[in-house]
Length: 352
Ligand code: OGA
Ligand code: NI
Image (cartoon, rainbow, N blue to C red; front, side, top):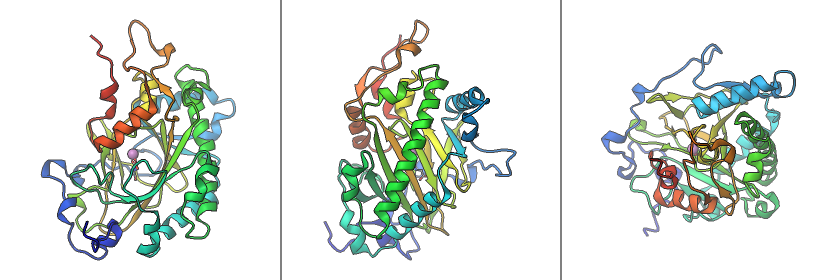
């Protein structure tokens, strides 16, 4: 390896006017930003449903469960407000995330690794070992459950990183569990069904840092992909970039402060026997501003056995997937690279 070439995108491109050639997508695989659908955020229309979680407790409980079920079935994505996570917890998380990426290169590189199975690592793009074209992103990835097993591996700089990120993780874990109970109920299953299916729950967090890009029409922050986990709870800063696939088009999901974006991952698609969809999404970049997004990937433990829920299998809807361990799934996901063809196809049964 050329030891003078920076490992991270941030250090490679600061101030450059052109996208390096290994970031340029072939013409048929570019973002076509002019064709993306945008919705105003005036409250009358939105790209994905907005769900008020406060109403989950009270007389409207079953309406909200139905609303969540509808969103999972028709969008694979929704936004939540009144989710119970204090604004200060969110502000502090975004602040330490930014401070981390502003550290000098040598300090950041203490966490660097290109091994996707390392439990704490700073890396770039998606999987530099397997991909042909790189993505316009650096990211810090942290395992977060059980917290005490991992927190000592996390960056110690900035000084409050561990404390603030741990507080954020505890909060998001609570939210994810409430969402999983609601999703179970919306499928007509016991509210603890998904919880039990996950074995010892896994929780990973990525802190994505997308530097400004001189030619955003040529590359992606992250190309179209479906998430391999159970559900993802995404926090984004105030810079737009997330887009979701819907009815054959890419739709922008612009930031609304202090809301979270929730999406169904591949494992819920399997557990629900395809009732709920793990939908393609991507992140695009822009020439003006850096962007930070912080997805929490809620997952089964690696030894949990995942398959369609018995209650959702019958003569009309036989099992669409074979059973597998999440470890097997996860390994396939990382080794094949981000592709719009989802990893789920490798686990499908062949229904005549
Ligand atoms: C992801 C992801 C979207 C974003 O990290 O899996 O989809 O907006 N991120 O950064
Ligand atoms: Ni994703």
